Amino acid sequence: MLRGAVVAVLVATGANAAMPSVTLMNAANADVTMPVVGLGTGGYGNKGPDTYTYPECWSDGKPGPDGVSFFDCADMVIKATTEWLQAGGRRIDNADSYYNMRAIGTAMSQSKVARSEMFLTSKIGSNMPMGFNETISQVEESMKQYNTDYIDLVLIHWPTSGGNSSDPVCQKPAPTYDAKACRLSTWKALLMLWKSEKVRAVGVSNFNIADLQEIIDAGLILPAVNQCPFNPHLYSPQKELLDFCHKHNIVFNSYSPLGVPDFHKYPTDISTTGVLIEEPVLAAIGKAHSLTPSQVLIAWQWVAYGVVSNPRSMNVTHMNENLSPSLFDTKFTPAEIDQLQGFKADACTDDNKWYECCGSGSNQGGIPKCE
Image (cartoon, rainbow, N blue to C red; front, top):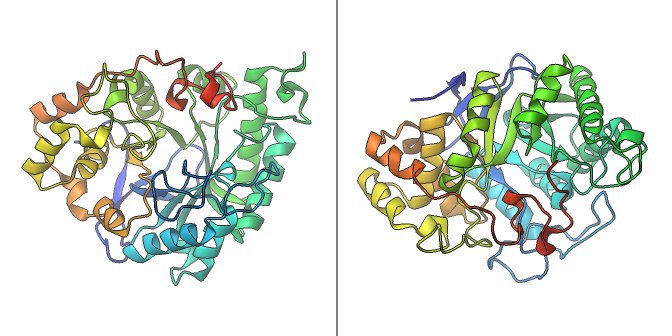
């Protein structure tokens, strides 16, 4: 049973014709629907050119908007994105900090799928500065690199600015820096782009309740989407935010829905294996419903909470599993829901290094701290 104000519709998506979509509200055109499952395209294996090994490499070897480049895995990115579209997937989740916009655009252009059938999400900020003018220029540059004349959904990637901005309130660490004012200035720019029809919907990512309340208090239109990490280890920490988003018609979009199994291990005090998809409880629930552990996680998020997700994969078998129509009407028992909600939360005691805890640790020092 879906919670909150999520409105689901069924849309035809090629080989996976029963893929549901959600109707976006708030800062979105009236006709915009967002497929429940998308392809995550931001990887962690960008430091080496090994082919199809973990962690996956998603960089295209060309300089990103910040001038930084990583190894050339463009062929892999194009192949994976093409296979996703051929499998029936239609939503692609990307960002200017994933260093692969050109490769994603190439796959989209070479695809036989009409642009109008695809749903492209992009993000601004994070590694790039926030601010009114910066937001406009980043979106315009993204459109050039994707080779598209519009983007379906653009998000503010992180609630704090990560670079040198021309906007005084976003000039970190100058005395004029004001995190709240910077967020609102950036949000106003996205609203302008939405009203100019360069983007069909706008939203945020990693925003907490206080960040969203600032938009309400400023009398501005709320985001259509808030993209945040979500999986059983994060149910308890994110429940209040999830309820807030439902109350205000903001679609909750999860990243890391599978716990980033190719890169991240959870602390042993909260996990029996360290890898979420290897937890025995997921295998047991999956056996009862003829689902893989990954499918259990995707289905649970949608069926129980109306959460749409972005599982990342370069494996076409896994892509087809993520798109299987059987996921979207799974009938979990109350006991199974309790088990999935009962996973221990990450207390972020590991020097705050994992991005789900914000990036103040030595391993994630480039990510702005939460404020």
